[in-house]
Length: 99
Image (tube, rainbow, N blue to C red; front, side):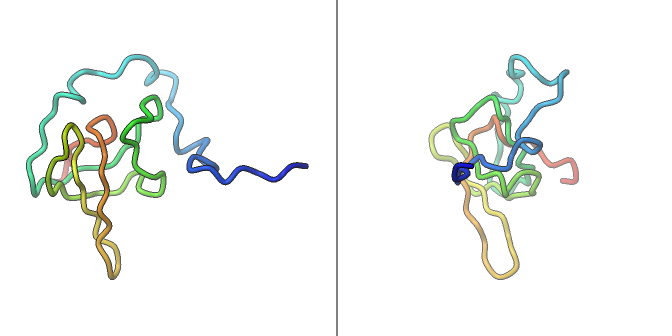
């Protein structure tokens, strides 16, 4: 048995896989949605797009939009004592339904 990989996407078979009906082209509305500073978003990683992908540990978490860097958005996730700053492209984020 060889040594297992320690890559960034290891142990992500379930978390970073799409259901059958979700496969295919990405809807344009997801790319064209604009987010304002202070808005809440949910990080939902799209495994079909590797560029601008946040780490898998942030999948499903709620973040605040702080600003923009080119096409990508700067997000902050409050954790117990610290605040994590993440840069993610719009393919990997969606508006939070709760406000």
